[in-house]
Length: 364
Image (cartoon, rainbow, N blue to C red; front, top):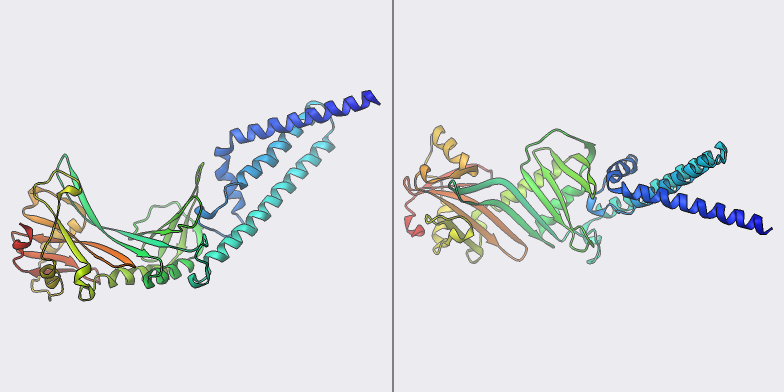
């Protein structure tokens, strides 16, 4: 009896050591295995933002497979029979299947929570969007060979704003998620902030005229790149951004502007406040009184798409203006050609407008 007990103790101990060894080996390669594990789990599961994907599922898969591999190696080494090995493999497959079911159930729940109307979510819910930042590729840059600085068009929306809820409704309507690898030219980059989420708080989307693009990432790399049908989202973003170019609705006390000082050395220190913002805003609401030719139109439009303004371009001033309330902060850019006395900016339809007016007094 004592010998039999000793045999079983040694047998169990060796099996435990073998399973631990298998688990340790799997965890050594855990980071490399994370991406293929997530891709496998997501085959039948709904697509959810990576900031909400639980990170313990790769650990669970590594634990199950590692233990099974260690025990199978022990069985084969000690010639315990193919039947025992098959049982272990069957148990490992069953374990991974249970993990897949749990992942499916959790991602389905997450997807349902993210599609709930904002007003139905509790204030402390991790699925409540609390802020939204929208940036564009429209920007003005000033610089030389050694220094550079610039400002871009952007919109920051706070919790409770009508525009945030309207755009988020478009995000909730994203559909037909498919993988993509080809490059794209995005119009807007949208960051949705979930400040109640414990660790990761920002979801990033990029949009063009019809689609939204999202990259799902894990600690081990990119899990996948997803493309959505997003006509509703794109139209709502366009509408919101256009609304903030309705200059007649700006409150003077919330309007501000700065310009790039000609004593350029790089950085925000070269921005100078425009004191008479009422005059500037008045000219922005004035009707267009100058019609540029095609060459002029093309020349100025390049600056709005990031071409750097240098001293070789003449006396062109880059202006950044903003409008701010408790619910939003909108920033945009425009030009003033001091030589031609032209104020150049874009309207709510994203069309450049030209107002010929001597505004040199603003930039002294």
